[in-house]
Length: 232
Image 1: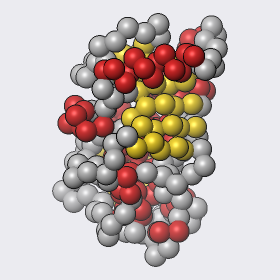
Image 2: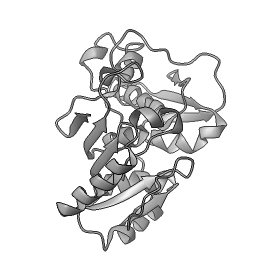
Image 3: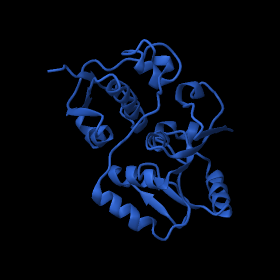
């Protein structure tokens, strides 16, 4: 029996865990399979690895390290591939669920040209990467002006204090994956939701800060024609 390669992350945010899917897809291309070790408090992220890896809930003393500089995804790929810098380092999520897909179809039925709008990121990066409140209002107006229907997705731990017709708070991950894939269009900040959008093949317009001591685009930005980054 082939021994599975164990992977884990010392950081447990959505974006950080999604970086592991890049390793999984590249290992599968070499006919190898990974086993992901997830702590129980983020067990909900197990579905990110459907069709890519086995998942075990537990703790691991040592985590998959970062090697070298550049993009965090490529840093992890260097653990397993000599040609890591040449590989596609984008995350990949294959999860689908019948009930979630049904909910998405019903939810989107009356929404013309929907676009997922995520102006806020996790609290620890809020002051660095999130939109300012006035930027949120301006973005919503502009998206509507060009014929899009913005769907604001937020977390109750860092809610967006703004009025908008379509707002989803703490959407279950299965529904969020299916919604992001079906909508196929993302506008927002550089955060875990952006990585999720990229993982399901969505077109992305990402508004992010200019390089500073707390953010470096070379560590987080993917090179792909479907992804546009705008630094302000």
